[in-house]
Length: 284
Image (tube, rainbow, N blue to C red):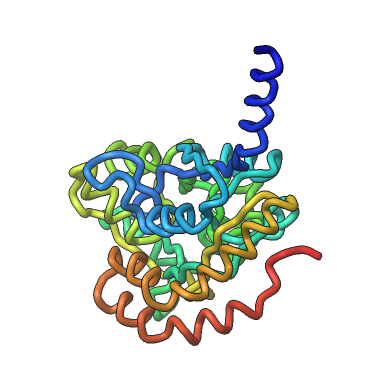
């Protein structure tokens, strides 16, 4: 019996599949982790399909903060997450080909406070971040470890020590403090993200999106741990992405945009993906 037990245990180990932990963050409509649309965020739809294609692995989905999700990428060999590229993240993350195209983060303000920001806007109605970030009387609310794309991140790094910043662990908490309690003056976010959460929280749509000077549409990626396993997974994910991103995946992402934004991305997706494919995102 003892040898039979050992033999069965060995068979179990040999037949066991490697594990991938997929992180999801409370960031609708990218990830929707609660409510009637739970599991239907546009990044979730893609990662659910990737999990089916990666049938040689077992998959676990965990709700984590951004900080925790990044720690898993950095400290394990078996984690994946949908995210934006940054130089720091590239030190411990292997990035896929671009999987989404997103309209840029913009400045979100309360409409009633717009006069405070006119001095930082140009004639096109775009906000100048260098000027805005120099005003330490205004409180900027952000989710801890959130990245906004290289352009905005660089501006934040340049001004970080002189800014008045209030940090939050979850986007929903930030929106409540911003829109309902007015504890922060402005946030930087995707308009569709803010719009979705305002509707879910039954808050009146009293916010305004202001375009940030100097940025346009940018890509988002699937990132996996920098390991031999991560390398294999990303190579397979890339083949899946290339087959689906111009058609199926673009529909997931544009379903939460207004008509003009959706039309623009659908029309220009192939050209934009081709351009972003040329950018080197993984360190040698």
